[in-house]
Length: 243
Image: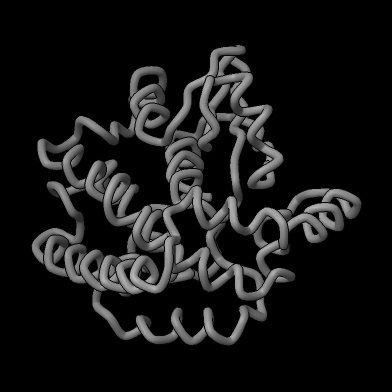
């Protein structure tokens, strides 16, 4: 079976798909895309422009939840979405509520340093593509802001509120078993840890950002390191992130 993942390297939804593929030990290729230039290729395959996209023997599946559902059907061990009754509701809450809100502040801060933004999102590209992307970013940043709902300071402040709400949620919800839904790792943990990894910056993982980070972003990351929710994210990565 030929399996290819079209991805952004530092997106929570793409991390969720990567993690599911790795956990199930599915042999696959990863193709790094750049935000903006990716749109034509992804639209041809799926009729929309969001990543991740998983292509299995020429058939494209768009969206992390749909990808996890498909992987559970084709590679059922370990099962992620049906393992606990509350798992899907928590997965959806992180996918649809927490991750988009947190991402607004993440992107807003990263856009303050165009060089670092390009380093993050053009990683894996050749030198020519990186230079072109860096040159176009001043023109494209408005599209990035609009496409992610970064409408002004209130959207950025809401991103901080979402981060604090989500960290508190996982700390409290996981207290009994270490997991968010039942006694084992499910899609709930997968979605939550992937979303929070944007700011927690778990070490030695596919979401670890290049150093040095911009000072403002590094300060934000440092500000949450003592939170119990941050400890949960790092623990989940340590115990369950297999590659």
